[in-house]
Image (cartoon, rainbow, N blue to C red; front, side, top):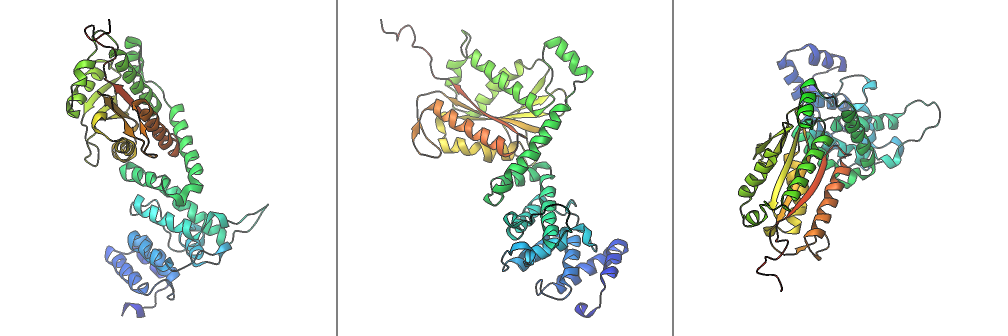
Length: 397
């Protein structure tokens, strides 16, 4: 019945913008029915933008299904190029598709981006010299870039996870440098904007240390405090022997949190087992006493962990789960060892010692930070609790 109603594009636009919720539901139902047989039906170019506007998920699924059997075509004749030029190039008029609308969630934007890079391939992009009149291929490229921009602009835990997934996808290897450049530019702007408040200057004057105001400052503070623990382990009052007996990560976390809390100098506070937005618990969290800024430490007792487990923890646990919030982009994997042992290299399988393992893990941390354009600061720290010297009784005379 609905398929027999002669809709005009202008009428649909009016109903969507000025009609009631019932009108919009009616239009959505009509769009679904008109597109039930695929993108080859008459007026699909009217109904697909409508469906994307009213139900982003249903519209994306329809586009995916319609392009599934289509081959990417060079220089503008392919169905994928034609559809992307029509859907997300706002200069063509008609029903607009707002990629920044809440309905276009980060996972949905990644689906659209994969589709765009499969059908509007960068290797086939048009090359122009001087002035030119944009053709369909140019419009499709602009639409592809609009989807990329929308995805890179997402925030929050879900946006963070999706951007990590995008960075690891070989399909986007050729645009990684561009994404990294944009992220680095954003990080530089943040650093330039760092200004101490009067209260923060007062803390600086009193303690000689100001609360961190950027991710770089938080990262430096965390590194400094962990280096102080190295120094503590060399002193006569060293807790090395006591800590070496701890086999429960919760107990070790308490000991480390106590030491870090004692050294806070009004610059930060320490929380244990803080719960993130998606109900994940991290071990130790620094909170700046200045702006809303955090750093996170994930603790692992290395004696009972494989090299692969520690390697994967950096991305899968520390980065993905615990550093998703915009204000928490400084992190450390802290690994303790209390006995002599070796690990299998996470990539080669070769047996390696603790020092070599720390090098491998820090290389992974540096690589992940680089892939994300410096928007995160990551490190791996090893605490060696093995006895440094033999006791008097055990010395060779």
